[in-house]
Length: 389
Image (cartoon, rainbow, N blue to C red; front, side, top):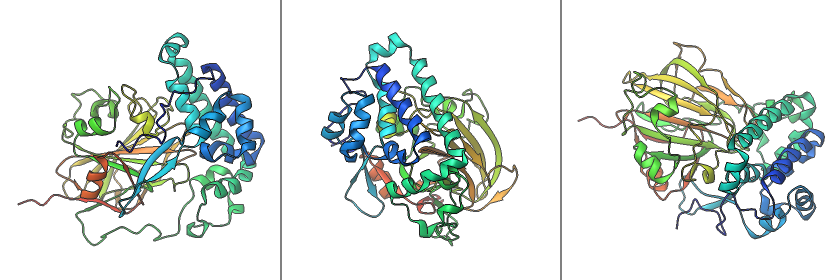
């Protein structure tokens, strides 16, 4: 069984009773409601199969057929917790499901409508949602968000939700010192996870494309937005190692260095705001990582002087990538030092390592080949430098 598939197999585009235009209006109305009703965070983020009848009725008002879909299908992905072998099902939030439908509904209809119209809607709503959650009035959304995701307030540097100036300040909240310790910190060969996330790892671009990334344009040069002849691409051949860190909306959204390094250049690539849910990344012929807005940080691994490339990728409803520890060129950072954070929404980080820097931990490789994501925390080991004979 391919465990990335949703329970009650349903294609992301399947919603036969609602037209493309109806879903677009419903998606926009859902986000507009979040600006007027701060308790509507639950409407946006609740797993669609667990929405109450009252909330389903509200969604049904805008999107005919959605109630039936929510009742009959658990739309989401399987994930396995690090150190366990039994997958659990992680349901997809409502906004991601609607964004998915807009991207995949009716191939012929998309050609008639023009795919650009969908891209513009997703971009517009992502930027708009970020502005809504920068507004001081958005602090009233925080309690609903905490309740929806059962967020552990006791691990936060500031556990009093009344002390945050807006929702986004809470979203990129800081944790208490030492709440994410570096695993095997005394071993300089260990490479660590950059974030609380769902992780997949691959020892080559070809393997990543075979098991996970189905976009036909996914290559290292395209990810870096550079020509294949660029000197920045040269160290990363087809056997470069890829680690894909997917952050869900509830996750701690600050990200950290996986290595002891020197900070290099940052390059921003404007693009789309497609959902980074695995059902989109796994869709044949659909490009996510090389189409989305992203910010690329070049690092130099101190032990080998080899480059490592850290690609922070925006997603649906994510309009901002902010560099903190990673913004000063020439700065030296240790494993686990903060690099930056994402503002509101789910998001993804892709880190590209030369093969000389890392052999991934076997459990992560095994899970990724099934394929299934592994739930890990920032600071967990993801691999170590190869032994040189």
